[in-house]
Image 1 (cartoon, rainbow, N blue to C red):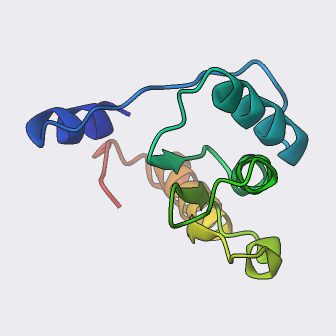
Image 2: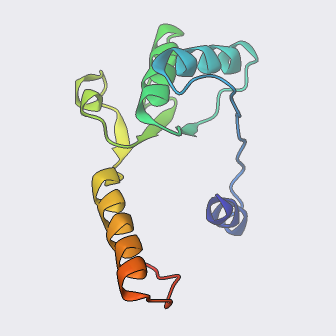
Length: 123
């Protein structure tokens, strides 16, 4: 998160975080986006914490006749298969969760069995 803030500040990009206490579901994304729309604070670009939130937010925008991506760009995170079936197709960031877990388990195993203390490591 800190890198995002630094990046925006270095390029003089305004940003706002819309925190939520909702579940990380499409319904939550829809609800949050409807709230943002009702306040008249629709940003030009949105990065969502996960794909279901992004899909719900995108549907709320479309229901409000706000064009995606012409009026508002939206991107999700995790690259779930359902992104391929939204209209328009949702752009998303691929996070290789299985591979990250596999590497984490391998590093932990190595630390335990080899008594290796050369951590942290950047992978």
